[in-house]
Image 1 (cartoon, rainbow, N blue to C red):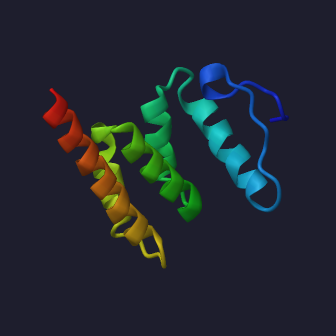
Image 2: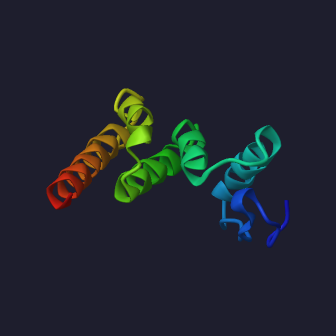
Length: 108
């Protein structure tokens, strides 16, 4: 895939610099080849299962910020992955998800 090609959702991609570039391109290519019309939440769910701890951590926290409660099981699963930082980030993402739910319930 080249820079500027439209991935899932049609937005242009600027590949990440350095060693992670190939990994990011492989994930995007996998998403494009397995299911042509994936929702944003579906894309985050795939990234949560990524072998990249950094990408999984970013996806978990972003899903929590967006209040995507359907991704809770995927975020919870990250707590059990062997990692120096992923369980802690998953726990924090779950706190953010819970806070968002509480705020939405209070405002309903």
